Length: 187
Image 1: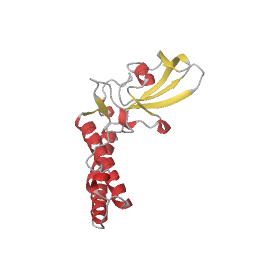
Image 2: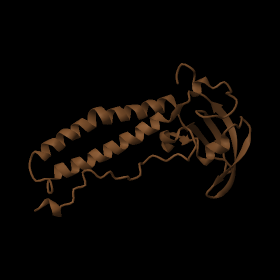
Image 3: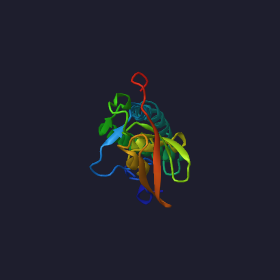
Image 4: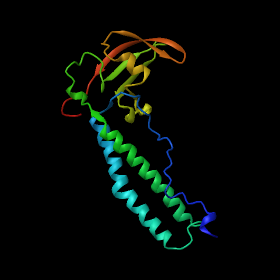
């Protein structure tokens, strides 16, 4: 088949949304030292390990002839675009990241970025969360973004304070039971 009738999308850069949340305009990308290290490690792994392996597969597949029906070639090119898109995303996030070491927080009696907070809600349910960067959210571990409604309601509160947070069910009063920060040597 003539190349005039095939669709080559090798040079097209799909701008599909990444799985990570976008930051509001003008908001700093706060991140913990551990989160920064994880993002950097992911980027380096993509650049130094995964991408070169996929490039080898694509080169091998391209040498096999007709690319229009070559699954290895087509999948490899798609995977390369995904890797390149993720590398660009990570490099932008890391470039604009502001690392905040919570272990150096001087005001440990108030809730700030990096604090681990235990609170009780209006239904008498006790929860413990850690306030982290947008790229570090892990609800199963209790890590919530500092941009989330619960974190924004808790910021600057102290032990014993009751704050209101807007939930899908309406306003909820939550009482701060404990505030912890990582120790200086263990951050």
